[in-house]
Image (cartoon, rainbow, N blue to C red):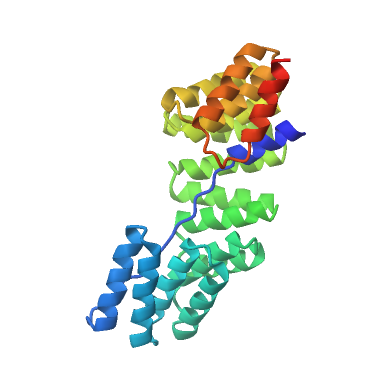
Length: 283
């Protein structure tokens, strides 16, 4: 069970769409500060961006865009509750502001408040029904709240709008995998590789599928496909090592775990597991 959980946690990929609003046509001192904040946001100078937005809001506390922008910076700094306060204020000033609903939904997801996130995404979708990214993001919220059928429906809608949406295919496959539907999961993951033969996440997800089906050779094969695209893909080494261990290819498994330790960040949660496996396999 421990090994199964490693595979699941490593292989799920979701991407959130961030939106930041720009300033209006009339250039004031507050707008100049707002633009400086935006510039620093894109440079990832979040503390400086926050200072710029604070000054902009102090000069013009009635502009919803500035609260949205500060809320996004606060989100990037990990202050989710204050981020929500700014989004709420922006919507109080401008109730019809889809970017804010998107950003607030993103924050709700980070706080694991999935019903609230779904409600916000649904509101935007009602006015913007042809944006694949909104269905994709709501699909994530459905997935994380274990509403798998709704997640599947949203990922499929995202794909219908944009047929080459590989992230949506990957997540559709992961949702099928959670339901134990290996056939549809395989179709989704293989579609990713058809669209983009160099898609590392597609190969990693196929490896997960192989592993769940007991096809450990296939798991190793697809991990190698991912590594052929980028030898630094440390999660592929971890998954390869687990599959090789199942195949009782201990020396190869040890090498895979050692490669994982070489490339994985020091903060990665599976480093201690990899070290334990190496020690056990060497006994």
